Image 1 (cartoon, rainbow, N blue to C red):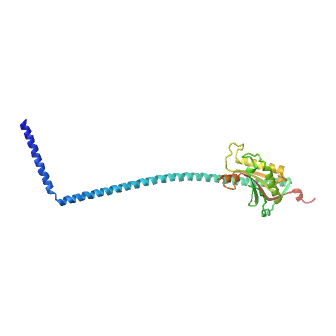
Image 2 (cartoon, rainbow, N blue to C red):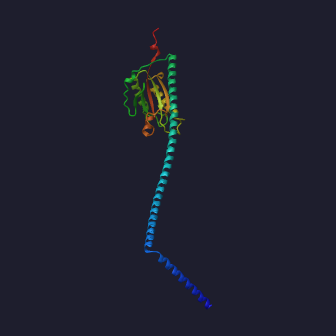
Image 3 (cartoon, rainbow, N blue to C red):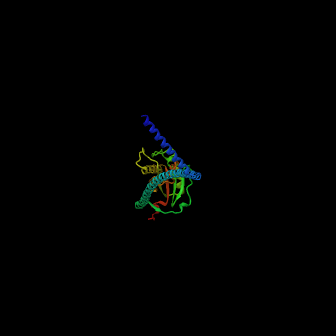
Length: 285
């Protein structure tokens, strides 16, 4: 046993001696200049590596920024698509409303023609045009009452808030005096002219009211004022006709409460046609 241990220690000693000699020979083969060059290359590689890491960080930040911009652009694109859809729906609604207005205009014109023909056949009135009545407007100094020319007619706006109780056709206490005052001025300025009674509403919902739609409400308003004219003024029924336009003819935008308030109205529309008794126009027998 002791001899085997001695042999092992001897082998280890020889191996260490050989390794030491080899290492000394390797170190002895590298010059100081080569060592300096190797160190410089190592430092250059370290700097290059640091620059690459800096560029990689910068590119990563730029990539994140581009991803954020892409997400924002996608959101804006969705918003624009939604806006385009809404605008298309609004355009469709306006187109349909314009078609209805044209139909109502045609129906109103036909109604006037029918009324004129009917009155002429019955011998009750003779209608004569008069284009000079636009030279002067009636002087009506009442808050909320507006007088304006509209083509070849004159329109006198009376606010629904001063005439009716909400969306009902019940008259306010001051409605009859207001209508009587306006009518007196119309008779003074435009005696014997055809007068249309037009009801107009705004765009607010009338759910919960007794009316099926805005047209029914506007007709009820026009009919209520028609009754006032027959019972409290001297205008004869053959000089009057009524129309309910609903929300189809706003004078201003319905986007504000003030605009909606003005659009809720009844208009007395004075036409250039004169209504005269047929007997007075007929030649003597």
